[in-house]
Length: 289
Length: 281
Image (tube, rainbow over all chains, first blue to last red; front, side):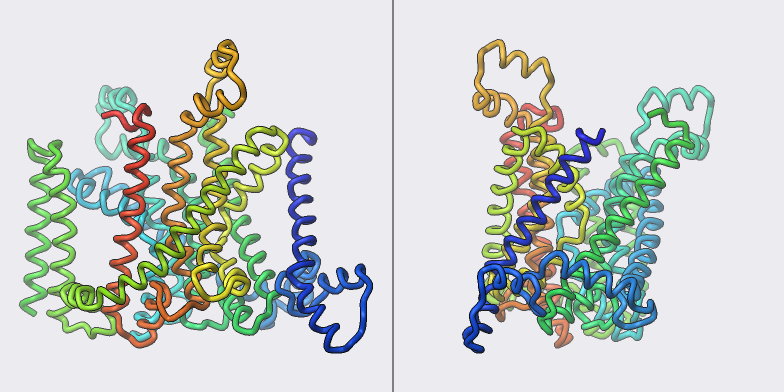
């Protein structure tokens, strides 16, 4: 187990770390050389390298600098503080979850409608598929500004973008899932003289659960991206996207990287949580591994 | 008010027509299958127009489709320049670089089992992350012009293509590989004659996912700084000037570019993987 799966992953991560440290040297040494020329001092090679890993505004911060910043802004700060990443993360997370909830609910409802109405299927489904090929993010700034001009601001506009991004994966996956029972199974229910709602609740819905979870994983990751991008155009001051934006304005690279890692950890946590829910649900539904 | 009533009536008519077509005897013909979504789309556009006029919705909230079409037609040179800057220079070059790099790495990864075990979980993990967040960093490194946009696109398309290609290269059965062995085929021959063709459906799946990501990456990267042209730049500045008709025109461009890009990849797929069950009619 360890040799087969953990060791290779650790090796790859180790190599990435080593490459990262190595990349810091050429990326940051220009600044060090500039400082040295200004002060007229000289440095040994090892001092020079150590300096590239410890600058205040490096072009590429070293991993330990990012880790230190992450630790400093999560554990060491009060969570109500404006400098706490947990505070900013929560702002983004709450918009993500609200949007994800709205998007999933609407998506499931539309999928049920599509499966039951042929007219709806033929009218809406092609557009739902085409909409997957459109960069929906392009609409984000407009939604924010339009809602702002009619007095809606704060969490809701971001949640709407999140909902929009998680909506279509759920529709497409759920339609596939509700259609997944084969003709034999549907025929069986017909021989039981089950009506439409019985075959929905007892066959179609349970059969769609694995598909639902697969699209929920895609949807939640998309929701988080939506919430982060939704913070960019208004120049928001709170949230992970705002941290990215502020960092890029003021050249605070360490802040950008730590916000990026916070977003990555959040995304990984959300996907893992849904994966856990999936396993628990499927086991309770009687799935055999 | 008359416009709003008209919109409601139109909605009813359009829906009735579609319901009759969809449940009618000719529902499975190709013409009806194209007509129904087209009628639905046209109805939505007409209702949008009527509602916006009927309720006199301010232009800064929602411009009517006719106005968007006029703006689109009047500012074709601007839109074209933006399209070239964002799509051709940013998205397309990044897509090609990222795709080729991911493909080559996938072949190396596939050759060494240890690498595959190590890199695949990391790649899967990376594919789920909000990679778009790297945009400010890459804009800082590569400057405001299209190079930084291409770099964002490279990072965004890399992992989906890598993961799908590696999965595809493993999609041959023992029997097939044994057959190649009995022919005395070398590694290279097995790769080019059996495993790459077998991997094509997976590779195209990755490429299709990457088409959307490429456009998203190129547009979002422009929110962090760009020269004074480009789709993302135009969207964010036009929003600032409340010129929403221009924003919508850019969105139409983005939608068209995204659909055609996807369509082109799907067409290539049809040509390359004609043998696959999903392509047979």
